[in-house]
Amino acid sequence: MTQVLDKPLEWKAPPSPAERTAHRRALLEWVAIHSVGIAAALFFTLPFVFVLLTSLMSDSQALSRDLIPHTWEWGNYAKVFDTPGFLTWWKNTLLYAGLGTVLTVVSSIPVAYALAKFRFRGRNLALMLVISMMMLPPQVVIIPMYLFWAKQLDLSGTLWPLIIPMAFGDAFSIFLLRQFLTTIPDEYLDAARVDGCGDLRTLLKVVLPMARPGIAAVALFQFFYAWNDYFGPQIYASENPGAWTLSYGLESFKGAHHTDWNLTMAATVLVMAPVILVFFFAQKAFVEGVTLTGVKG
Amino acid sequence: MSTYTLRAKHRRSTLRTLAFLSPWLIGFAVFFAYPLLSTVYFSFMHYDGFKPPSWSGTKNWTYVFAHYPFFWPALRNTLWLVAIMVTLRVAFGLGVGLLITRIKTATGVFRTLFYLPYLAPPVAATMAFAFLLNPGTGPVNSLLEKAGLPTPGWFNDPAWSKPALTLLALWGIGDLMVIFMAALLDVPKEQYEAAELDGATPWQRFRYVTLPNISPIVMFAVVTGVIQTMQYYTQPLIAGKVASGVIQGAGTQFEPGYPDKSTLTLPQLVYNLGFQRFDYGSACVVALILFVLSMAFTALLMRRRGGLIQAGDR
Image 1 (cartoon, each protein chain N blue to C red):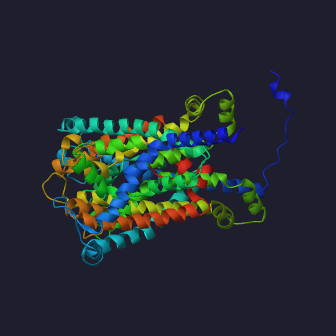
Image 2: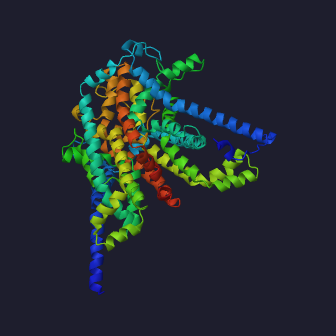
Image 3: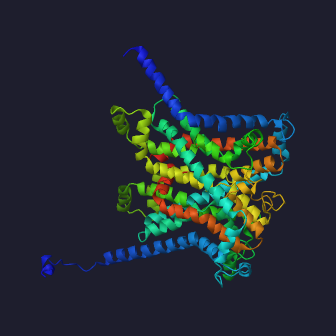
């Protein structure tokens, strides 16, 4: 009950005019910055909002200039799922993205480890070549690659020409992992060696557990890459709708449903949603990956 | 230790390195070196995929430079995109980065909202923008009309299709925002305090403290932006396809670049020549031009004090 008296009363000077203007300026600045922030937030979110709203409109209303649905047609989403092929595209996308990611991670880790921690002649050259491969547009080598997969191995009409190369290391993943692994102090590796660990055991038992955030970032980027890829499926899978992925099939919605923007937008939402859901679960790993390399996945 | 064991040890460590590198060494040979050499070879051959390839000298090269109607428009578009889209993206990314470092309330919410569009799959994002900006029923033009402003044709108008693509690129600014945010937070606080003591205005603080500190990152953003422009494929292609109303599987073939070649980019030419005109030789010529341009900018990136590597080692 004596709390009040425990603290000696502080005499507070009334704010001087200078302090008052400083305070007012800080407040004004806060208001200005947050207003700009809200305007920016609208720019970034309104496209999502309009897409969502349109995806819930009736067929006839989707042809109008209305912004808000009169009736909320949740059935549009059921119609998208009923579209022939849609579930196959999901399955194919998960195969391409899932299997591709596993293969990429497994094959890129040892390469990244060697580039980060082994000392050997030509290491810088190897690293430069990795970066060059990373920066290379896929179109540069597509003609010989297509002839190789389609004419020699007869694999066009499938996604295998896109999945198999991932078993041989992906330049971007190698680079990102290498960046991550260089941050692990050598002392840990030396300690493991002193304890009698071979290179492989050191990698598996010491390095991998420490590199988990880097591996998570690589896996995410690779998953998104496959999910988003349009050019690859266009080259190898276009002739066979049974091998299409979501990103490739999505466009055909506009054709199948002509001017009905509502179903096209519902399908668009269904292609965006998984990526955004994954992001919310793995936000940290993702942002870390972006700052680590500064390059798009 | 005898020289014998030393040499054995050296040999073992070489073998170890090769073993660890082997997935990539195979990948490099099969998916990079071989196809690259093969691309050079095919660029001097006439090949349509059916008759065996035959030597054609520099015919493909003169065709692409002198007769192929899409080459120069695609190159001009690329220059436009480098000059305007890349510049605006870097400026906007820096602006949003500055904004987010100064937002003190609900920072996490703002950051997530600003970042999300970057994650939208390119095909989906382009479809969304083709809808938002469609001149008939699109919400953007509806709102512009209500506000009494002019309503451009966006993806349907050759003069507006690239600005529309730029708008889409600015929407997905999340990657640059994160990079600039990290760089801005790295600027030493003392320098700002010193500048404040000297009575520097906010602009002077930005010009003489912020900019010099983050200039390597600005450079990095510009060069990677140029490299990404060389690879710019999905968005212009989908935008053109959706706006033109020509869709895959409809039996008609889409001539890329709609409207009026204004969305052509170099990677689209490789597809057009190789997979629509079955002129693999000329497709390889464009592929090599793309290769030289990409590598030139990549070399620039690596030369600038290790650019990329350094940015990652921060």
